[in-house]
Length: 395
Ligand SMILES: [Zn+2]
Image (cartoon, rainbow, N blue to C red; front, side, top):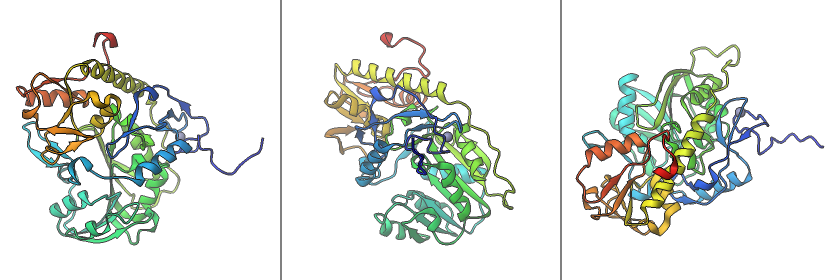
């Protein structure tokens, strides 16, 4: 046997441990890309006993999938580039990033002036919301390529756009934001270490990632290489040298939000953060629930059938059912009236009578929507309870 200095492609992408444990069960469920397109690919789940992270095996198949997804990436294609909206219990719509920032600023007030870098800025939705709420700040965006340069630079308050690695962005920052980015990055603790270097002492990091324990659909996303639960995200931040200030599962439904501070003085020794709690029982529950969702939807789709929701979960389910899906339903006015995968997107009130409208969402969100929209045309169907408490055949 020869020794090689190259890391094994089947080692833990977070800590390099070579004994990651496969976690079967995702393969029959199918995948979706993070820009909400049905995806055919490898998608192998694994768990690292050394650092505790639930992950996709970052092998050549995974890297090929990511290359293909990012090569044709379209943010918010369902809404022609407009940001996803969130809805209050009364149904009032608000851009997701504005909702998040209002929540964050109420818990962690910022000075009137400062310098912010948004990592993975896309077409600048967070910068736009941040600039409106904090007009005294100088804003910067960083992304993988030049595609959004002009759009981002045209936003009020934006001083620069970087299409480079994080360590090459010039200057230092008071706040660094990273929304729906860290779950894509192999080596998340090392990546946060680069973020630490870009922050001024005492500077703040704002991270949001999907919480697979609240949103099982996260496991089906082909290009997410880490699937976080609260302890996993906290462990990664501590390992990178941050002091977590707030870790919240409720600021935005089904997402994990972390605010962490860069210490004023450099740490004298590496963090002694321990491995995250074993996420495998929660992953098993999530996979079982996804299997039950698929079985229930397949049964309903023998009759007239539409999917409520046009994002990750809706695209994933469409990928499994194909033309058995007759239509989509969405409350987001940016999405209504467009076709999605060749199917019409209706307002809830316009859903065809006598069709099943499947609330393809985490159960608590689906329940809230059904209460709010009781009385629409089609029959709103809830997904199974989570975790599964009844045998699949009885659903
Ligand atoms: Zn590891």
